[in-house]
Length: 472
Ligand SMILES: [Fe+2]
Ligand SMILES: [Fe+2]
Image (cartoon, rainbow, N blue to C red; front, side, top):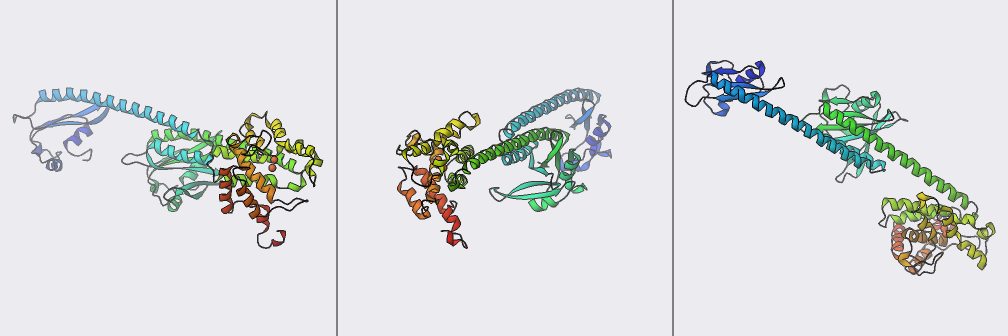
């Protein structure tokens, strides 16, 4: 019933007690409520429930049992009871509010830890949205990032059953509520989006979602707005309040830290990778006959890795190890490296030293410790006849076994001034023939799968594309 209806409504409005017999003659009485209750109301005694100057409710008693009207003594008893009840309800509310706050802070701490446990930008973005939804108990959340070059905000919406298809939505800075928040750097609490002139239905139309209400806060890194975090549609019957706004702001600070960490890590990783590439390219320049070898070995390794159960971390190490696998050739004489004909035993020994030289060069770099075994052992063979250590089977580091297959396949299929490279078919049949002897069986299996999928493009396969037939 409305808070101003009937006797109870009057008590709430005035804050006064009510004592009357034959209430049916009182115009304030609500016949409707009595009818709904199927109760014959005669007399009513009602007092307000008040705590801390706030009216929490009304206690109403109806029809004294012995048929007598209520009297002053009854009112006194009810008043005393009411102040006790009000105190208990007030305490319970404070307790619930405190408990709720503790719970929210615990959730915030937990979510921050999850957010900051990843350095993958995509994962951080997904987790930020999930965290907003969990923390504010709402239907969905979005994280817009600012593209400063284009003066736009963008975000990805997951589509499809598995949520694995992504669609990008872009807004101009200043457009819509997110655009406003990005431009002004201020938070907004919107109880009803359709009534806010700043609201743009563009994102809703693209994502096929109906936005009713939202809390939107800026994500700032070093006081610069880098994005906008939104919590959308509080689960009914609740509505977003100031408390939600402050919570989301606290989460946005954590999101900013996680995004910055991921960005810095990515930048550092790229610098690292590019430095390694530059080093490999410098060495390759000396060996004019094997141009592009490092890049192809890296490509073959990455293609093969798709058919092996490697963790994302191992895949990253593999890539770096593939780039650096022949770094030790820097210590091999030019005449030996460039010699077109057959090598003498002594020259061959020099070539065979390149994994050890590479090891000596890289060994003191602490961040490369996971990369070194893949580089050092890329010429080992399962039958133990490889070098430099003659390791066999399972003793050979796994990344080295992958590089070995990619490396040999490229050596077989590349032309040299003194001999023509094998055809693609011939090289593949060599891999099959020596699988388990010269090459790791699991790796060969994965390599063949990648090859069948068209992911291994040897020099012959590349050049036999239409219009370039003569090269084969
Ligand atoms: Fe090598
Ligand atoms: Fe190589």
